[in-house]
Image 1 (spheres, rainbow, N blue to C red):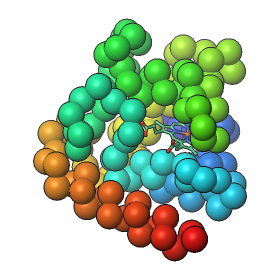
Image 2 (tube, helix red, strand yellow):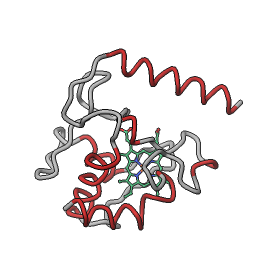
Image 3 (cartoon, rainbow, N blue to C red):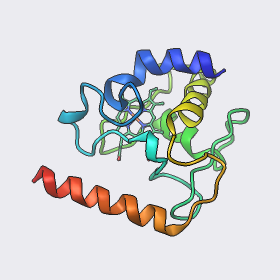
Image 4 (cartoon, rainbow, N blue to C red):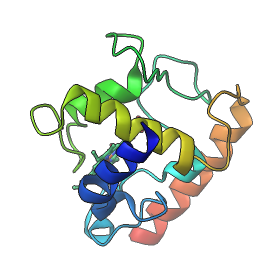
Length: 134
Ligand code: HEC
């Protein structure tokens, strides 16, 4: 599953999200908001509390319980993140997310329940990059 997901990632996602998932692919510099840096494990769209990782279950794409799957299916309006519905099959979307959550989220374990301070830390970073862009 992870291997298959890796192949999907390196054909479809790498351009924006980067080889190591740091959000620094060749197209990234031209995009705002920038593509997500997966290494830090901070995600925007989730049903979980702020600072916690989003819901993802590689085995069941159930609406309302699988935040990452829904993001990849529908994309993020207002950003360059495309909708992959009809481009990647259900299975490929689950595969690529297995790869992302297992191999690219590095600074946190995907099953740990992080504290608020983690978000605040990363939030400062976001503000900093935003200021540098001006
Ligand atoms: C054309 C550029 C582009 C491509 C290609 C792309 N993304 Fe994204 N992606 C983005 C941008 C930009 C964001 C950040 C959007 C934002 O902050 O609102 C993002 C955000 C995300 C997020 C984070 C959602 C969240 O809750 O924070 C996930 C997960 C994601 N992308 C997965 C993928 C996967 C998997 C692929 C390949 C199938 C992919 N992306 C391909 C541009 C791209």
